[in-house]
Length: 216
Image 1: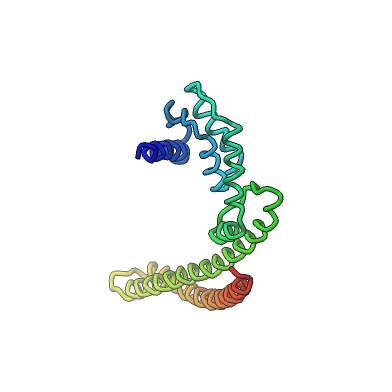
Image 2: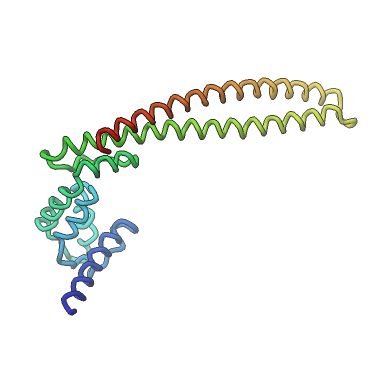
């Protein structure tokens, strides 16, 4: 029971130091946090997240004012072990598919497969983004179309109002002409975007089939 409690306390300290750096930056770390002895585990956690080797520099900067130096060798050994967990092809695919970045951290014997899977995932991300972008633009055009129609109705009502002057009617007629032309443009743009989305959806479906056949 005592051993289990010590392990929980130790892990809490490790997670606290990592969270402190991630959430608030270097200035938030205390002397106690910097004194956590298991730098191997901290390195492992960073490696398993794909962090670059520069991460140790943040720990050094954070702890320097407390007169504490991280155990560089233990940290690096832990990070090396963590990277072997991170640098699996399945992780590479998921990182790419979520739009994440690869920091060039994988060891040479694992990097090729990782990058290949990452690129496959990133291609999926790009195809999904194309579909989503087209959908967003279609929705934007539809909203603009409704707003333009409302503007036309408002202008038409003002045009026939008794209090509208001749000069204002001339201006309103010019506005109505521009609004009518814009409606035509919006409708044409919407047609193009719908076609663009259909192509993107087809490409996405085709690529998803390729991925399924490849075991993703």
